[in-house]
Length: 208
Ligand SMILES: C[S@@+](CC[C@H](N)C(=O)[O-])C[C@H]1O[C@@H](n2cnc3c(N)ncnc32)[C@H](O)[C@@H]1O
Image (cartoon, rainbow, N blue to C red; front, side, top):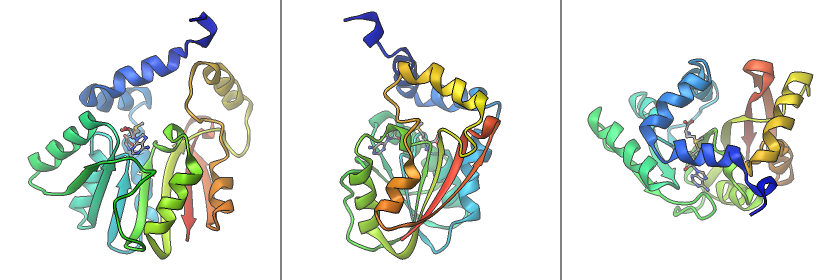
């Protein structure tokens, strides 16, 4: 394999995702302790009671959602992450439905959720059109998809552009995709706000 084909950032990313506890601690460190605050920005927009969280990871946000009294279902692709999320909830004394499942095929009836929440998941999704159609199908009318993601900021600032130039050749993550445009095309009403260092974290709220 040619050296230029090796995606170094992907190797690092996959390695720490394989260990949910290492992931939890490392991600807090890499975000200078901001990760959980960024996740919790979803609470400003949640409406209704029945919530689906996709890509729950080790389940930190999921636990907070449960503690706030929402009726919550979790979906997670990686077995180790789903296991850790279930364990976290059980240790805190809660029972919740966490399914090991791909966003591209959601095992639910049409129009049953008030909100769908995804934090730092979108860049991993290859077939975003397919994922959006599935989310739209299971959302009630006027339901919301609330996303926290990393990506190119709207103000396109120089530091962010340099950072993305450095990382992009070394990853298959979709960091420069215009996620908002995909939701627009699927008929959602979409709003976006940028925050975090150099505005590289964003919140997208897409209403069906
Ligand atoms: C960067 S982690 C974020 C985890 C957690 N939401 C957080 O904020 O810490 C991305 C998570 O999304 C999950 N994921 C990636 N692609 C997915 C898919 N197609 N369907 C469901 N989950 C997926 C990964 O397994 C991983 O746990």
